[in-house]
Amino acid sequence: MEVCAQGSVGDREWEWALSVGRVVELDRGQQFAWQGMECSGFGVVLTGELRVFRMSRYGRQVNLYRVGPSECCGLMASSLLTGSSCLCYVKAEVVSSLLLLPASIFQQHVFQSRAWLDYLFACMHERMAGMVGLLEDVAFGRVEARLARLLVNLAQAGQMTQQQLAAELGSSREVVCRLLKKFSDKGYVKADKGRLTVLDSQSLRHLYQG
Image (tube, rainbow, N blue to C red; front, side, top):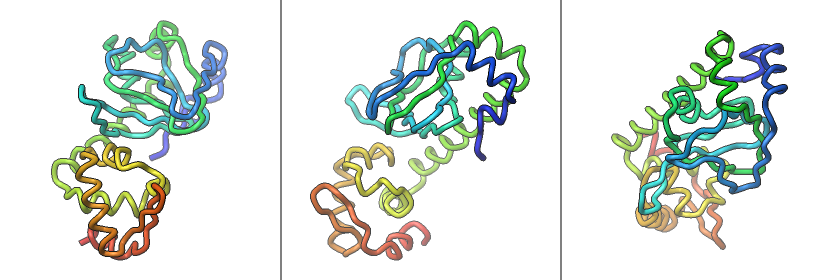
């Protein structure tokens, strides 16, 4: 399900958002939010893509979901509405921009607008469904099969580092390194100057399709 801010809240409410908010520009790799921070505003992505993730005290990351144009971060929205600290890190994957509405103004307005409430609940439901799917993958899926699916289905996977692939899978870099060597030895993939090329997508699909 695609959740679109302007399409969901209507032109009048979107014009209100534009009048009270400000556009924030983010460079590629720039951090937007941290675990434990106070949410100072409600953001809707205008362009680009944000990566939402958790990080352990040892620096190990697990990606929760990505936020694209016309979408909002469900976890940040829930923290804002409940007055609790942020539960995740948010970083720009590419050059991005978002419309940021001041927290106090949005908190007062959102409960008077059915359109914004519907949009928020739709975003939260979509993010929750995605995180449940991630939890099922981590708890019940084999890492080998999940890595194979990632390499076949994620366009930018070939440009990712082993640490980034591990973050997508909720695994460790050492496990990913071992599996990539296995895939390479079998002729499924080829590693050249830090770039992965899929050579045998059919065999990779067989690993996760059974």
